[in-house]
Length: 292
Image (cartoon, rainbow, N blue to C red; front, side):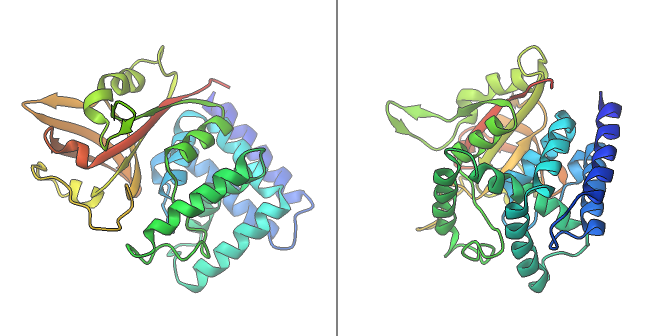
């Protein structure tokens, strides 16, 4: 199946390179990025997160691993849509001027990731979702310099935006979060980790698993020590700050959760005490791509 996907994407390389491409997308540029799509299929975890695209980039990595045909389709949709290309080219220009790309092909990863929301924007409910994501991005204004009012394509996503993108790509999502009556509480691992484990490990439950978590303090998690103290948000901080992928079953032993995660192009094993984990893992979305 994966070999067939490679062949189909290679055909797409030739088709896109020879198509009537808008001036902003030079054939050599398009071909480079389509070839980068092939590389992502071979090394899904090599995807680079650029400029506030963690949620969207995570989905690109998951498509490369579990749904390569969908990654191929995403590539073709982006490079055949002049409106989307013009928007993305503006973002890329601004990021180049800010020296955000250390390697030329990193712009390809950004385009694949960020292009998803531009394509979603063209759907019936897409504009509402897009405006909602822009509104959420405003919560980061006093917290980091990464988000520049959307001028660089930075876009923070909430769980409903991830859910919408999964549906757009033909995945069946479930939003997982702890609840107390009608009040949504931070934290979801203690309540949902058994269901998540089934999705990750049982192909009859999730044939092509997609398991993502919205977290706080991810860099702190990856230091290597067991986290025993809670994450404390400052006044005005967003509800969560980062999206990651959960790559394996969650293990609970002696009160410590051990979780294999992916972000920033690499896997990390994090260990967090059960008494404080709900201050780090805030909400998740899990499900499966179909087999098509």
